[in-house]
Image (cartoon, rainbow, N blue to C red; front, side):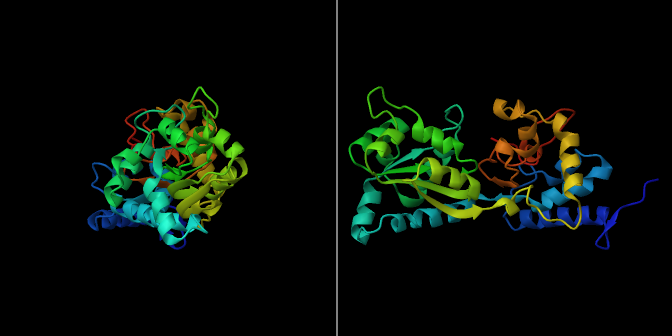
Length: 304
C-alpha cells in the first residue's frame, strides 16, 4: 500500500480536507455560489486518489470573483476614467464621458455571448449610462470618425489579441475602415475599460495601439499564473505532469483551444491563469478548471 505523502508536516488527505473547508467557508459567506454552480468536491473526484493533492493545491490557488466583487472592481475601473483625460477640467472630462460611446471587445468569432455584452449591460445598470451610448463597434467607429470618444469594454485582458483584432478589424467599406485607421490619421480619445489585465497583454496593446489608454483595476504578472507559482508542496515538474496526465480527458468547445495541446493544458496562449468570474471564466485560465470532458468529467465552473 502506498504511503500517504506528508508535506510541511501535513498529510495530503488532511490538506485536501482543509482546502474543501475553505471552499465551504467561502460559499457560506456568500463569496462563492452554491455547489450547483461551483463544484469543488465533485471536481476533485475527477482525479485519481494519488493526484488529488495537486488538484487540491490548484483549487486552493483558484480565485473566484462573485458578481458583487466584480461590480466593485468594475466601479473602480470606471471611476478612474477621468484620470486619462488630462489636461481636461473635471467638467470637460465628465462631459466627454457622458458623450462617449461604449462598445464591446469581440472574440475570435464575434457572437452575442461575448463577455463584453455582459459588462456593457452591467455598466448601464451601475452608472445609469444611456442605452443609446452603448453601441456596436460599427456605430462606435462612426462616432470616432466624427470626433467622439470611444470606450472599449471587457472583463479581462489576457494576451491582448482580442482587443487588437477589434482595433484593427474593418467595420466600414469606406476609409477609415477601422479604429486603427483613425488613430493613424489623428489622435482621438480611446480608452479600454476592463477589470483585470495580464501585464503581458497590456504590453502587447501598448506596442500595437500606443494611443489607447487602459483602465484596469488589477494588473497581474506571471507570479499570478501557473508558470510563476511558488510551491513548497509540489514541484513544477509534478504540476506539469499532472496537467499533462489529464489533458486528454478535456474536450473544450472552443476550437482554438481544442486544436492546440498546450492551450488545452494552460489556456489560451498558454497564459495559465487560475481565476474565474461569476458570469464566466476567461479562456486564458487553466482548462482543467472550466472545460467539459469525457468519462463523467465535472468542471469546477463551466465556461459560459
